[in-house]
Structure formats: C-alpha cells, structure tokens
Length: 335
Ligand code: PYC
Image (cartoon, rainbow, N blue to C red; front, side, top):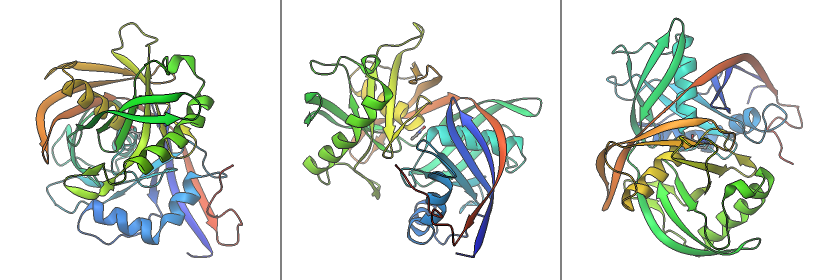
C-alpha cells in the first residue's frame, strides 16, 4: 500500500442498490480466469475492498466492481465484484449497474453491437441492452446456471423457532425462507428485524450442514452466503417479492439478480415455473427485475436452469476516493 492510494470511481445504483465501479486505481491481478483473479485479490488486495465498501467511504449496503481485460479475447471484459460481504462469485445488480456505467462512459466497447460477453468469477455471462441516446435504458443478462441444491431442510431461529428452508444456487448459495407456521412473510418484519435474524441463521445453517453446499464445478464457491426471505407482493402484477440479506448488515434494495436466479431454480424444480416463463421479482423497496427461465441446464448432477434477469440502473456521481496509510480507518469499520 502506498502512503496515499487514489481510486477514481463512478457511483450508480441498480433498482436502488449501490454500485461503485472503480475505473482507475484497481490493482493488477494474477490468474487465468476471474475465479483465480478473485482469489488473488482476496489474498493480496482485500484492504481495497474494505476501504472502499465500509464506512467511512462506503456503508453497510455498499457494493461495487472493477473491470479487467478478459482471459479469452473473444469476450468483452472480466468483472470482479467487491462488496461489504467479500468478493461475490456473481452479483446480478452489480452486473446491471456495471454494464450501465461502462457503456455510458465508453469503458467497454462491445465487440458485437448490442451484446456483451463478460467473464465473472462464477463463469461466463452474456448481456444484451438497449440505449436511449447516451443512456442505457435496460440491461438483461443470461446468468450462470442455477439449481435447487436442497429442499425442506430444518433450522432453529432464536427469534422464530423451527423453520423449514430450501437452498438454491444462482451465482451464490441462498437459503430461502418461504412463509410457514413460524414465519408469516417478510411484509410483517422490518429490515432491521430481518437483518437481526439472518446473520445468526446463516451461521447456524453452515454449522449444521458443513460442506453440504459446494458448487460441483468450482469448489471455491461454497456455503450459504445469503438469506432470502419471501412474502406478499406490493404490486399485484409482480410474481413474488423477496428481501435478501448479505454481508453482516445489508438487505438488498434491488430484487437481487443471483437471488432471483436461485428462486427461479427453486420454483422450476418444484413445478411452479416453466421453461420460457417470466418471473417478476419485487424488492423490499418495491423495485422490480424481470426474470425468465431461458433453458434447462445441468450443473454437475443437478437438473437446473439457465436464468436471465432484466433490470435498470442509474449513474449518480463521480468520486475520487483516497485511502491514506496513516488513516486509522484506512480499511473501514462496521458498527
Ligand atoms: O444482485 O446478485 C445480486 C446481489 C447479491 C448481493 C446483493 N445483490
């Protein structure tokens, strides 16, 4: 770390959840894929994530990304996701925000107009988008394959008592809590209450089911990282609503791209959603993504789906952020 490190960032949000794209100042990373580069970043440069995501330069929900040259020249770019929770293998709202910023600012020039091929740590995704003048109106990405990993598991919540949940993968592993005897639905809880319950539940799930959730094709992607609560919708046209807990104190303000993918895989496996069908997912603040089951897909031995997610993002600021070595909070803090 230099005495002062400077990061040029462009800030935006996807359906309400922040995306801070680091356009200058990101480190060079070793590795032949974004998965390897992610491991290298976590080992050598995690202080950058902490400094830019946590207070005082960020906040509990802060989330961002850094672009890298693709490993395969046929692709347009690599993306590293940086969040308060770590470096996620995949982030849906992060992808929509990053693509919007990158296209509006000319940071990525598509090899094929209207289409992007992006390398993420979880795998290759393809993106389509529409521009209105200089602005990007919407972004749709076809995500990595998603699947239902386990169904009808049980855990005890200190606040709610015995709960039943499913685990599905959509780029991260999600424990999904649907309304049931001891949980009436997310609409009956405040965000603070959901946060309070989620951290302990995630800890208990990973303790009770050690090594149970490991991606069949990349063992670095493992364990439940997110808790997805479901409940009744605000908009009668929405298919479903969710509140996703990530990091230690965050509830996603967007409908969560990887969470929506995981939930579509859960619904598909349970016969509630068919091939080609749309899934309008609403967030805790009422913003929406449109998901779709694009194709059937196999992940190891699991029968899953290839999901797509469509949403929008807005750019709201430019930020030159410095991290001074002698700042006691160079690496941020959480309260
Ligand atoms: O959109 O995939 C997502 C996401 C993960 C955590 C926060 N947002």
